[in-house]
Image 1 (tube, rainbow, N blue to C red):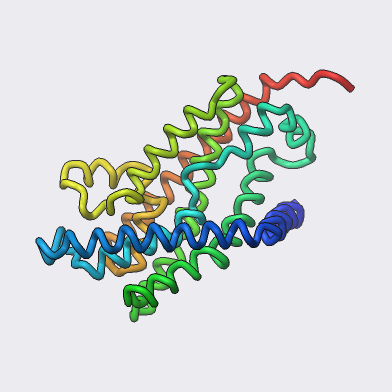
Image 2: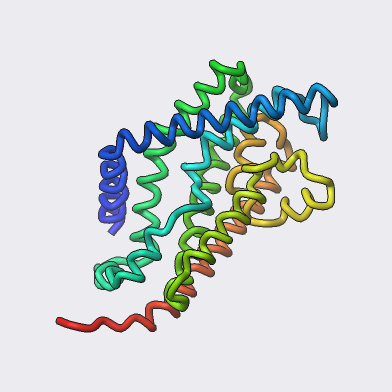
Length: 264
């Protein structure tokens, strides 16, 4: 069965290779917005050189990491499962001799890997060339990042699967998905870096699952989370992953009982 899931992921990866121009357009878009945000940040730091321990270079690096990783984690704009539920194609997925959630999970892992290689790395390189944001010079930062990013990616899969499942109960579920995406973008630090939040709001954001999607991997990469705090944050990220995965599997079990296939 593991071979089957691996094949599903590899097929999803190959499928993304077909859309080269779409990826190129997205790449340019992310670089454009990364540049706009960077110039805004540079202007703001003229008034105050350090905010919550972040100087202008730290904030620039954080911004470009978020732009690079957003399609790897993708906490918004994913309606694939929802569309299959509305069209009835979900019946085909449910009839496959495999677990419903792990089938979709494998597909998304393959897609995430594609965006890591062909979107995230080129975007961060662009940030290095345009703004000199550099790379970590400590090996343990890289090791911690390698642990945190896959957890964030899997957390993103569980989250978007969760809000797509609303379509089993609501006919027009896209509004719910849009709201879920906006909330995720705010609390992942896509609009404003979480380290720049007021202390009370940052405390709330730290305990939400969204922190583990983008902000935590970015801060780990930058070396802002280390020592015992690093292990605590990784444990919290892992706990949210387990909770969301269990929640999704429970809901999917309930939802699939509602599916009625007509015809022959």
